[in-house]
Image (cartoon, rainbow over all chains, first blue to last red; front, side):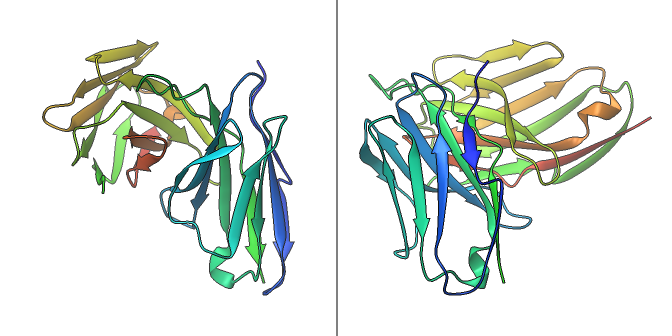
Length: 116
Length: 110
């Protein structure tokens, strides 16, 4: 079965550089979520999109922005990178949040970002 | 804000034992609760999802229960195997975001 695809899988950047992470959800899934997992930490919710509109926002820094495109893939843009941004970034997808019944979130393999 | 706690933080058992992992959450207004497995440096594999209207879900040797009123969930693993060694995370869904616990690190020794 098709899974969530994330690219790149590994990324190394210098401080103050920018990075773009991409996420391709499972076919027919219309909701995308981004999470950040620091070393030894639990995943923290950043932001989500439903039908190309932002649906919820968590602890996402102002230096980060994201969007969902017409083909439902999503991109997380990160600017002015800091050492503390080094983490594993997960994308997840699910079917629509409808009638209060949320469906399973399926996670991609993650992008490991290292900021030097 | 939803707070999720997992006990114990780490657990070591000999192969073949049955074990229980505990998860508690502070806000009972959840849509569902999801259990994940994570191997070191790897992604999150969804194990079981329990909707708020359900009491339990089973998949193979795994059984997860949910008591929404008391804010508790348990993951029962039967006849543990060395391949079960991983970190197990529970996550409560109160809307779009999943709120994760810090996980239980499980080691099953041969």
